[in-house]
Length: 214
Image 1 (cartoon, helix red, strand yellow):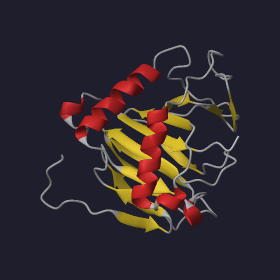
Image 2 (cartoon, one colour):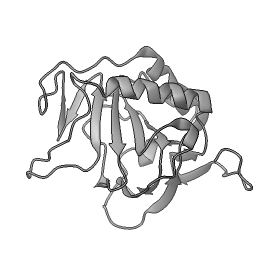
Image 3 (cartoon, rainbow, N blue to C red):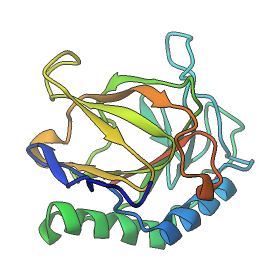
């Protein structure tokens, strides 16, 4: 809910990793959700990601700017319908730069050019991983819409402890760069039916903005 008895403060979870609760205003949340619904339509729409070992990710994904697949980038959906990836909009890059300026300072704001959008239903998870397929060390910007999740943020050396579990709710911002840019992170749990009813979303959307360096 937006009106809370004890408002959640922003927090530096690790050096260079900042959580800002409720950063997206309600109007921006609705606009971003509508954009995600358009991006999810085929061609080059929402897909199930298959891993090299033959498994599948439980969170489904759509990409903008460049198409991510394990473990690289392409200009077409090479592991899906083969269509050209949808363009990365200028306004989304501006949103990413605004997020970095507000958390890590203007000197770290960069020219964002790719987005990975993951959709989680109530049973979806994301294992501990690093965002290491880019050729840039610019901060990663993560925006949440819909259901609340447990976001596990670890360290750059190992998938195991130490890590911190952060509750990400609809509208929250999480930025990680600098010494935390290659930290392992994942989503061990989504709490179903926790999305704000006025948003009109069942499930969770995570919009992750990155600089490809490609």
